[in-house]
Image (cartoon, rainbow, N blue to C red):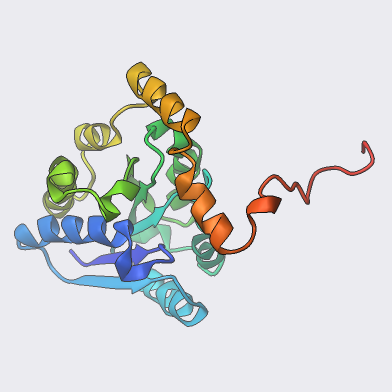
Length: 224
């Protein structure tokens, strides 16, 4: 099996998407799988090369972070470059969607789109793995994400041996569909004391945009 992976994170090798892809490939390689080809979608030239590689692939995994409930613009720009595949080839296409948002439901809208996408491209959907609460991986102790890493290695092994993502592993990765009640209480308290908004306010202040954070430039004007 020849696996082609497309990393749709603007952070390329520095992001959580790259880390999860690494775990997946470790599990994939552990099953004596065949070749792996990795492409990044972070620039126009890379997207063109990745579009050409997509036409040759046997099994494709497209991975990206969720940005405001949607895929990054670079991923959609790349998808628009793709030509439909020959459906007789039965190319398998799977997806990994990770986000900082803790609730799996935040990714369900884009997941619904991804389930239909392989058919539109002439391929076959092999599964979509959704995982939230990942931004903490940038600074939290490694032991906090041992189960997540292990699950992605398991996905890689399943892909190599069965040619698909196992639904039970996908469900395990998704975790809570909505935030548990006790976490909502904690979050409200953190917001009350200003801690919850620090991750948003810091870049706004750094870029001189804090005073304009409530602007709505696309809102209807004049009551229209």
